[in-house]
Image (cartoon, rainbow, N blue to C red; front, side, top):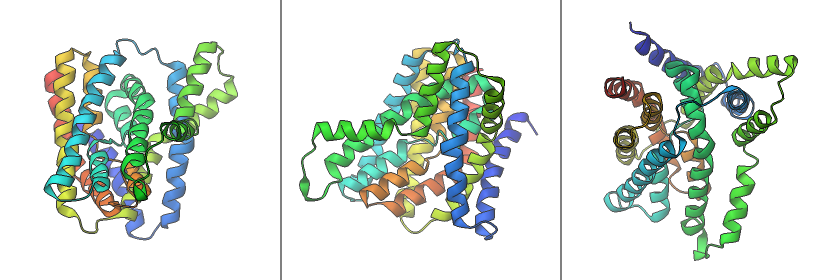
Length: 316
């Protein structure tokens, strides 16, 4: 078995193990919520902090990377919205859920351990550049669209309220705190005390496996209940259209090999829990979002292997 295939199987085996523990009742659903909170609120912020402090980011072109990735996000989001509203006849709010489900990659729970396993620390540095803007951009887009379409009674959108809501959510997000704290420490140039460094290293090392296991438990909690056809359509957009667009754009822009490969693989990741949380916030499309997340994640075992093969062939 090649190291690449073994890594892919290892990553998704941890997800499957988490799902199995929930399916058999070995762990209660509340355990999954606690494990997810630890991964997102403790382990992953410390991993990002560690990366910001230690990394040099040589050879990475952030503006070209961000431009290529988010142009593909915008186009795929629009396609997901149109598929839901024009083909499946859903309302505009459900269309937003369809758009975000087709464009919002699971860059934290699945992406971080996956990129670390495939491309190592250098690949994770590229991913960190995406994470640093992915959360704010996707959060802002979701909030604006929620204000436009998610309010009852046709209330007009107030720009100041949108900005306040965005900033409040942004600066209490543990991942953003981890990134900003790491950058501040890096700028200060102060070495980490030995005890703090050992604590950070120990907890950051748990981020990957714990995040994957927690994701499996989450999938068991959400499951599949109806809306299979639209969920399949959105999964095709997420797993094939979006990475294809990113591949084309990074190739046209001539991004460095590693940067290009990470961008395409991140685009090929399935949707994460954020699409479901947005659906809950809209109070519409919850089953659609959870079904799409489950179907896309199960399919990603094969589709991510396909895209890894493609990027290795194209970019070496």
